[in-house]
Image 1 (cartoon, rainbow, N blue to C red):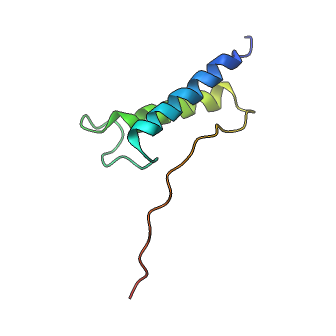
Image 2 (cartoon, rainbow, N blue to C red; image 1 turned 90 degrees about the horizontal axis):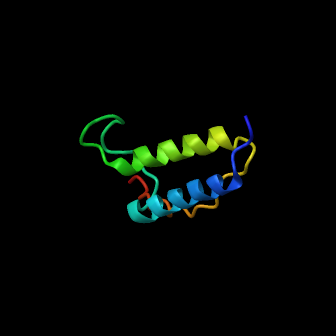
Image 3 (tube, rainbow, N blue to C red; image 1 turned 45 degrees about the vertical axis):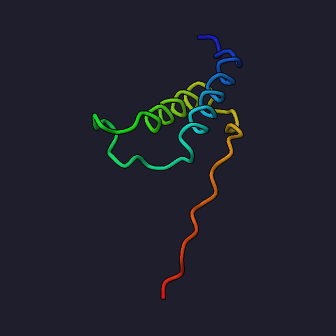
Length: 76
């Protein structure tokens, strides 16, 4: 089987950036995967990352800006 076209990797990365831009930060879904009321974005992110890792295992990860971590208040 020939190696996947590099354009596919760029399209996967672009799709990840677009989904993350629309959904904010990477967060675990409030409902488990497969639940009918769970949001679609976490499922799409997981599927795109799996495709990218399987098709391009030696490629460095995409440059995707992540949201800043939430401030944690110290315990009293």
